[in-house]
Length: 216
Image (cartoon, rainbow, N blue to C red; front, top):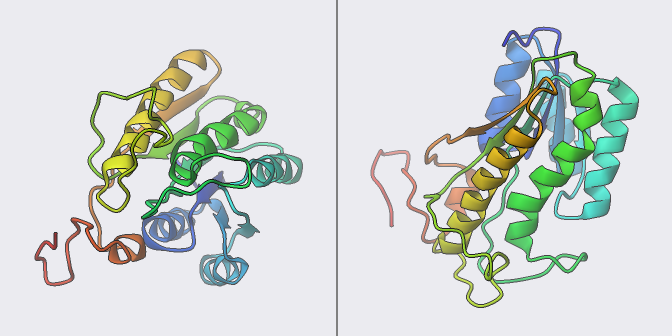
């Protein structure tokens, strides 16, 4: 896909893999909409690479719908949605919508944003893409009785994070099948482990350090 002149939205675009994704796409000539929770950090990224800042807390349904409506109204069409934003909290907490935080960030947010932006994606005229980033060590089976850690929750060990990312992969397959023939493809990308700010903040993260050694 040639991205020069295309409009691309990147969530979690203010740091780590999301920021590098936004930077790379901008270097290839795309107009990038950077979504991040911190307005200052979003503005700093846009000051560096160009594009548009769209501050939002994507764990909130109202914010997801606001972003989808704003982007659709401003641009009319969207060529690519990169759902990079994700969370791996230590403890089980609920959002203001009553949804477990990791599930809200890693599963619900990509779904609500993609479906909310579907008219704009279809307006691209074919070839539009949704790219959902998985992570951790996603593996099945998915436990439908524990999607939000209702029965057991293990944060920072990557157990619940892996579960939500596996659910995201299943969701991506379902959307890909549902949207067949619309001109919008749904893809999953696994970037591998990286020494990102998110991983550095996770005590048990199995991520490579700058020296190349793995920490457990």
